[in-house]
Image (cartoon, rainbow, N blue to C red; front, side, top):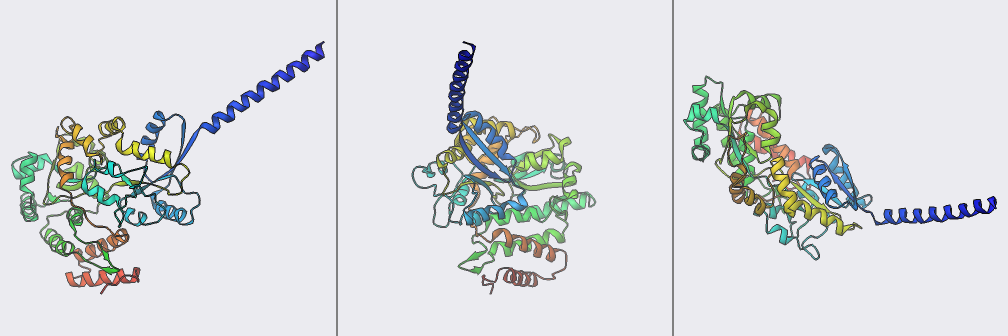
Length: 423
């Protein structure tokens, strides 16, 4: 009898085990997976919120150091092995990546991404499209710029710290130059109007009419040539402080109060000024400068042979259109969005203590509408670096004239990119 009971219990145990095993396998099979590559830790916040909303999804988020990220991404896209379903791309590399024929066409059914683009700022919409006008990615971040200024300095030297009045005072480069000369003289060389020639470059480079390369030929837009005269005047008259952007003297100047104006995009508030000058809350304001501009931004794209396109699209929509998530992102992290409809809803009430109570979303909504659509080419990131090097050589006397600077620049572009006609 005991043997029979033991035998029966064994059978029952086996049956239960098989049932539980089947349930476990079924649960595992029901679990959806999504692979995302990113170079920015911003993605972690969005992924966590997405998984809270979609508990049946496992997101494999791979963070790759930015120095290696682009080359790894290009490599997997070219060989079509281990390609992520969704990947983040920084604006500097986006013109190069979006031309690779491995990105899903988001203009077509079932995506109809144009409906999402209609809610975004015009300059972002142009960046999201490839040369044929097909939407290849979605931007989730709005990056219009402004002139962050020290209120204590503008009050002392200009007699006002009111954003509208300050905006009028710096509405042209000629006005900025006059302020720079005045401030440098009255402060005995202790204060400069601008931190670097980069404050001029970030504005002017957003206002070009032609990209670096057109039909295989190098093009130096007239805006860039005129910019050389502006930066030369700023350097010769001590209008800019000669700081290296992101260098220790540059970051220290924000806390110290030795620079009046810094031209930076939306993300400059949390990631540059609050980070580097935490003890100056209330001493800052935002003003419009000589021209509208933008800088930076990140785009989401989908692999066109992904086995998880539906889920990939859900994540991309979540990051660009979900009102609850985006409202939380904007309010909790001072994150200005590409979705201008939500920005506009938040604008009347969102203020910044760091900016003296200024309605900064209201400011950037206005700025974003004015940002021009600067054309791009796949060579932009590399040629921009060469341009910056030569401008530095020009300003520091290693290249004596504007003509020698331009000729040296053309020569180096030709050496680095023999396929480009530099004549």
